[in-house]
Length: 49
Figure 1: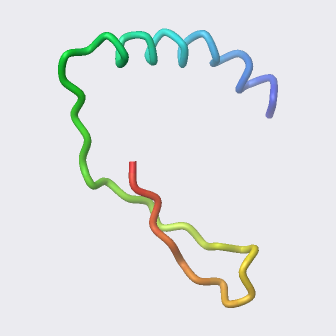
Figure 2 (figure 1 turned 45 degrees about the vertical axis):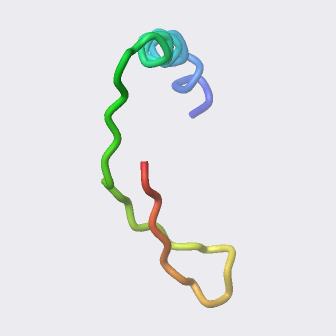
């Protein structure tokens, strides 16, 4: 799996460079439900990005 992340790093860097130079950055409340496996209760959490 690491090789895939390393292969995609140049694309990530290019996207990051465009975001940093942008005059406007759009964010929304899109979320992803995740299960906190490290907690005994298995509480679900939301990752917002």
